[in-house]
Image (tube, rainbow, N blue to C red; front, side):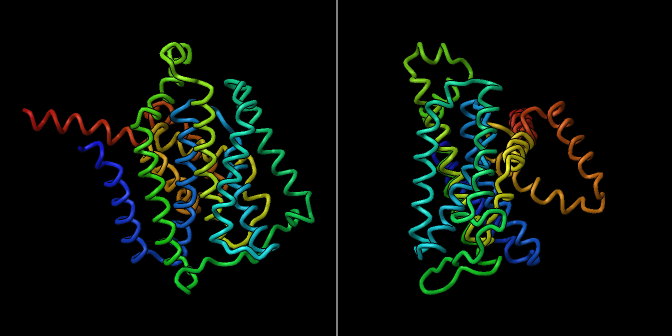
Length: 317
């Protein structure tokens, strides 16, 4: 019963904390929190590929960008409603990821990392040079706002409440999936591919499913990003962002939905908190990453996991 409740408890906690923050934070901090909510959805998706299936993918930002550009093009060039463009963008991105996943996922380790990095670089080159469709480096401005019951979802505070619903739903679904037999199959394929195949798991299908689920969450994040910022450009989806998603998951804790959210929020706010360091921030960030890899290899979420057995032991004594 507790296992079934935990996805709902996680969703409730996200909504409760987010709604409380939406009341007390300033407009600027609300904007950062909105970006962290959108980023957290993308990092939760990256957790499917890297945290569960062990796929070293450095092209995650390309899937975010595909969805964002699809929403932008459909709403500005063809006049589609954002509510129609968003599901189309998500479906198209997932289909593309599944089709390209079969040949890509024949590669392993650093070969897969280089191939997905090439995918991200190719996406950047295409969006930066296809002027008639993407606007090139000038980007696509004037993306229409979402409307709900006749009202625009405008302003950081109202958009945050809207985005929190998506984050809570994605987080709860990801946690429930991770604890299902499908999630355990991904973990088994990651830990020992040969043993997983001998036990009847279709490793190729599991890896492609992880890749597609990763792209689905990235697509949701991309659509929300386009609707939040209402302007997109190739620089928003460069390979550096894919590396940032990887850093966020490592900092928060790979294989953990809560860790993905913690890492996304922390690394979104951290540059602002440490703005006074100037360029020295990069040195601090590098030192922080090394410290986490050495002392907390399972990320910040392991701090909470370590305390739980101690409390249980204290209760028993």
